[in-house]
Image (cartoon, rainbow over all chains, first blue to last red; front, side, top):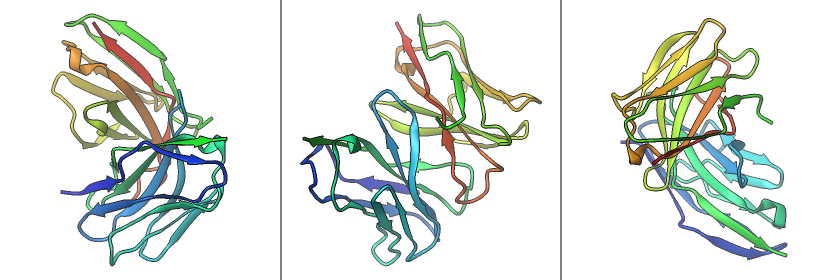
Length: 113
Length: 114
């Protein structure tokens, strides 16, 4: 079935470091891909999305490119800030069902000042 | 603030009891989704309603049920509660529920079953 695998956390970085959180997926056809972020004590917020191959989603300095050939959607940011500390979820919406979003297990990111 | 509201914020109850969680979608959104977030299962899709009708079911137990009312708010009913039902329950909404559409999440209801 459809699934999302993302790198285990926690990830701890210093401020201004480069961030990569790996995400790969398994799905039939062309799913839509998302990154959601969950700040402490809050609900999930959409960070960025891509709906077709080679699309790049970007927001708040974060980027991810939909790579069909490697079934990946890695999240990157050039220079992280303390305020980026949160849990990041990679997710997909399968073409077979527009209703649901399938989430990865989440990666906790902590940024040291 | 996503515009999706959920009540209550916290709920503590005992095994065997029944609770109702409430969700109000963003203004104009016709689709409502329910998700469960637990430590062992992660975030799982439960059910989707569109304009009052059930559209899709995920990993929802038979002890759980949901409905969406004419004013588009939704309720998730959990009955015969077990310890393992302790989790964070999120509601999300979107405009119609189309493919690739962004879902906007509420702040969640934290349920603790003792």
